[in-house]
Structure formats: C-alpha cells, structure tokens
Length: 398
Image (tube, rainbow, N blue to C red; front, side):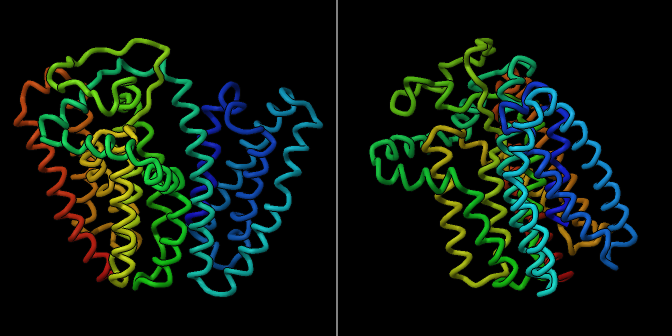
C-alpha cells in the first residue's frame, strides 16, 4: 500500500512540471520508466485474489492514472528530446523495473512483513525524487508566492527565549570535523530512515511498519504550508553575518523581501524535524538501546538544523502539530470512529493553521507576546498529550 501510494504521487507533481520544470529535475524518459515501475507494482495487486474490492478499485484507478500521465509525458518527451534520447533514457530503467517486479513477488511469498519493508524502502526512494521535484518547483515559483516577511521567525525565537540555541552554529563552524559528520547525517536523513523501517517491522512489537507512509504524507503536506508562509532561513537572510554577528532580534523590523535575486528557502515547519520525530515514534515499542540510538539521531538533527542556519528554533515547535496530524491520519490500527484519532487530527490542523496566521499577519501579531507564548505552549502540550493517547490506542489496537 505504501509503495502504491508513493509511486502514484509522481503524476501529481508532473502535472505542475510537464512543460517547463520537469527538464530541470530529470529526463522525461526516466520519469516515464518510473511510472512503468509503479504500474508493475500496482498490476501485481490487480491479479492477486486479495486485490479485489477496495484495493482492486484503487489499483485499477491508479493504473489508468499512471497510463494517462505516461502517455502525455511520452508525447511531450518525444517532442522535446526526439525518439533516440527519450528511449535511451528509458532503457536505463528497464533492469530496475524487472528487478522491482520480481523482488516484490519473492518477498510477498516470504511473508507480509517482508513485503511491507520492501514497500517502505520503495516509498523512501520515491521521496528522494519527489523532494527534488518539489524544491525545483518551489525555486521556480518564488515570484508567484505571497509577500515574504522576515525575520518574523527570528523575532519569535527571541520572544520565546530560544535565541541561545543559535550558539550551536558558532560552535559547529569552529569544529570542521564535527561539521562534516553532522552534515552527512543531515543531508542523507532518508538513507538513515531505512534501518529504522527494518527495526520497526522486525524489532519492535508493532504488527507492521507505518513509518514510510508517515514520511511520505508529511512531505507532501508540508509543501503547501511552505507556500502559505514562505521565508528564508537564517543563513540566507543574514548572509555574511551568520552565525557570529547576528543582530538583536527586536532591532530588525519585519519587512517585505522583494529582491528576486534572493531565493526562498522555506523553514516552517521543519520537515527534517518532522521526519526525525517520526523515526523516534516508530521505535517506541522497541528495546531501550534502539530508542536511545534514534533519540540520539533526533538530537543530531536538531543540532544540524540550527547549526547550519537552515532553520529557526521555532520551526521545531511548529513541526509538532504537523506530526500529530499526520500520525493520526496515518494510524493504521486505530479505528476511524475513535475520538482520539479525530481529536488529534483536528488539534494538529488547528494549531498549524494558527501558526500560519500568526506568521502571515506579522508584524502586527508580534505586538501580542502573550499570544505567541500561549500558541507555543499549546503546540508542545497538546501534541504531547494527544500523542500519548494515540500511542496507547495504537498499541491496544495492534
């Protein structure tokens, strides 16, 4: 299910990228080959006895969707690149397509957990390509985004007393060896998610792995949030003075950034934080050593997001409501009739919306510090409380 959902998301992105943005990301022939891979996986489910009913309808609809978008892309690709280059790109993906379908068959025969882990790994791979496509679209769409106000989040950090965390950037820049090691963990975070997927399936007491679905859904949800509140991270906004000479927060007034030469690098809410938190939630049923290892990775992620100047500290606070919403949305073992599930979804969505309104109405909204404090407190307490209830609801249902 995870792999089917992941690969079906490609055409959604391609709708926005077909004519102008897709060549910036990857050759059209390779994208069509990925869709053929998706069709192979979905087609296997169509022919299984368990593929009837809802799953069968989903598979049939996905096949039609993939086929239609594939034909459109092929037509555009042939027109832009010609017959030879297009099919040369396609041939490079033939072996992975065959290997994908064959391995899916073999693993499904070994047991459901093997098939789920395989699907999760496919979904994580899709996230890599999807993330590249999403950022390319965002970079090209800067001029269409609403007015960018900065440094709103920087001022919120100051109001909440979070400014001392920026010293991490100073320390990290003074230690190049640590800088390099942390950079690897930060840049390839999805690679390090794969062993957690295996651990969730085979080490914890959870009946199936749901981590990849959470990573996938949160990735596609956070993109429109970035467009609602587009901001530049500290490294981009305070270019030349970060991290050692940052100005006093209240001395820098919130203002519109209209320079088209400065690229928006979205920060709120932090997707790195969201992914790292989901990694920890996935192993809470596991042994202490596993929880400790993933908790250490989460701490390194926090260190990196602030130390590299790619996030404000409040971005982590804003990630908690998103985690709560996606966790409740993707909870596979909790009934849709459960009050805790709907309560968590509504609370997460309401808190995230409140943060977006706060950012969009700045600087007027920042004249009320009590509102900022109350919203920050609720963004920590409510996900903690409802998340704990959701955890036990999952454990009881699983």
